[in-house]
Length: 85
Length: 141
Image 1 (cartoon, rainbow over the protein chains, first blue to last red):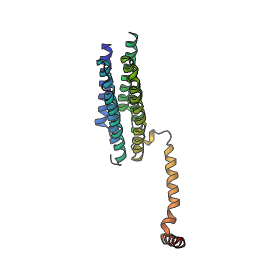
Image 2: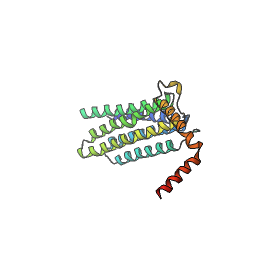
Image 3: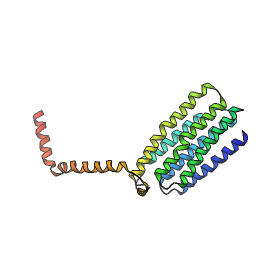
Image 4: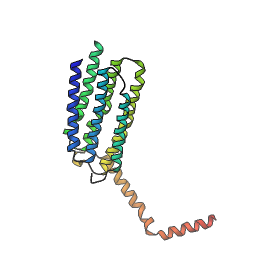
């Protein structure tokens, strides 16, 4: 089980690095918003992983808050984007 | 023991969803195909991780909370993806040469023709329209 936890942590770290690469390099603003949405999803996955490792469920409300922040952020940016972005 | 194996498989599956999203974000050519890749960890990855959490804790009162978490994500993700996709289409953040079919293009063309057909009478003689309105108002009073 411990080895599996380390493997999952490694995969999540690689995934978040790839998403951050796109967020930094992304040609348009919408690409960056999309990449940061993926980063938020991976943060949620890491929160669930800490809950599984430490045997508690205190961070479930943080999951809801994270999905709410991602929703509001991408909707706001998509609403106010222009041709230049 | 068996529960540990299942939890491990679910965790690795969810992590691989995140990895697929990362690779897709880096490798895919334009915004719409990147959106296709980015949805994996938000819906399926979260589902696998929450299933692993439910199996690990093994308490029934936790299930409605997890379902609520996942349903909330399931409701908000399509809305934000729709907004981002529409903004990307309107501001031309897509590569036309990669599209097989653009069904929205026909709708936009139809709407433009409709507006052109309706627009000239309103702009040509606004005075007549105002007279018409005045006459109707007089009859009503």
